[in-house]
Image (cartoon, rainbow, N blue to C red; front, side, top):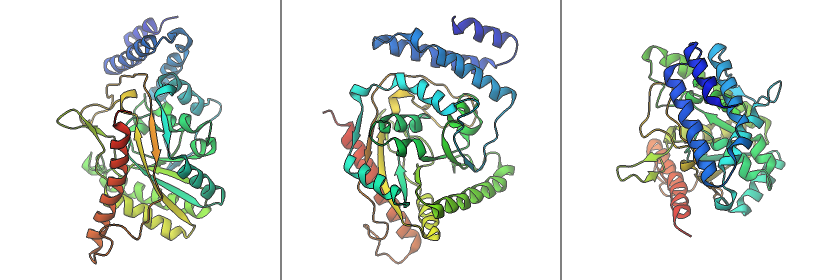
Length: 333
């Protein structure tokens, strides 16, 4: 059975909008073309698009409301497995690399001792959590399966993104990019973020947690020359996670994580206020590099007295760690 008549029928009945129809169709077409170009049979993977369509319709009819801390849903629908099934064919294992496994070994040991790990990372695609899980599933499945991802509100309300989000462990926040839109909701969003930070503190007190956060507040995008660059890190975001870790008093370790995933599901060229962003898929490799543990007290500029300057210096230092490793991974091998 083809997805085309089902999409057309749903559009004609008013079950989906023209925009959503166009977005879904482009994702399906590019996914199909990319797999066929790599010699994979699309019919073997077609069922996942029927699942996505049905899950998307559920969200349109009855939107799922995320709590500050969302734990992945496995039943009655296994959203976690759905996300992995969708992304798995797009991940070219031969082109993928998992770098600095010695640091992953340290991370694994620290979590096993009921200590916490916070990953300060760049972010490139909506499916970065699934890609990380897939790359870690053979060597460090527990890290990938139990990691908690800090998620902005866009992936919690877009009906095409929500089915993937429901299959992840998430700390749900409003990013700085969207907190002022609309203005009358700003205070409510700020209260929600404060609640989420309290939940984070409680999770860190419990211990044994691995948390992924993108301090940029969004995905990397191309610069004026068309080169994808690591978006700058927000000092306040890093300071907040550092503060929650200190309040928790459970030993917490910080690591830089650099990833190259952009081509698999690139974001729009510019940040959009409206929902329904265009999506295109490509079968490609994913590169993840787990850097050395960060000394949050001693770094270039840590000796300055002004606390704001110190926070800015720390954020710049961590951003440079992620950016430098990102650029190293992008170099032809």
